[in-house]
Image (cartoon, rainbow, N blue to C red; front, side, top):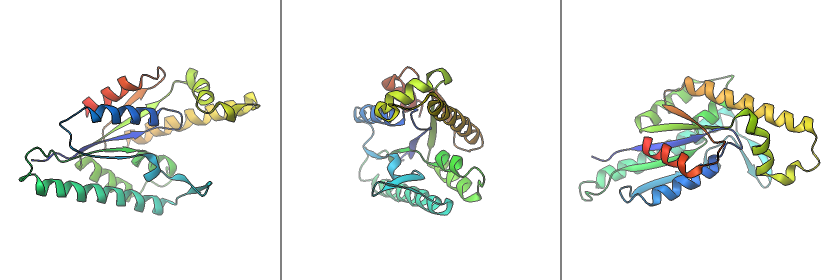
Length: 207
């Protein structure tokens, strides 16, 4: 029987999601047992994104519709894999990796956690989804923020950096709070050491 399973990467900006996703791709490419794989970066599922260099913030309803469309797509593809599994004995079903998904929604719309997002999470749970929340320690936040886009911080004041650090810490805690309220099993990985390959292995083989 084909097996449906997947990984969801969550975390605030600068936590290392893109780097871990890159390592997960490399790890997965070496796993010959997985033949059907879908990997969607945050550009296909996040709340805030750019249109013609301008930031656009999706409404709660728009974002829910987007997430549901992505889940429906995955389910349709997995159903196809199951249908052909009898003629393709090596087929294991669909394996997916998503970046910024249900927790991104919960944090963005924490003032209104709807039944719709809970139902979506139940769907993901049934699809074998497991979540990893990437975080950074408070004593490493300033270094992580400034190293990612150094040019952005040239000439910025200490106060401006403190505001950015405080926001990251606040958002990280909100991600933790929302993860506790979600049905999807979640582990937290601190990325201070930037050991992306090690983190990827921990996530991939735990799943």
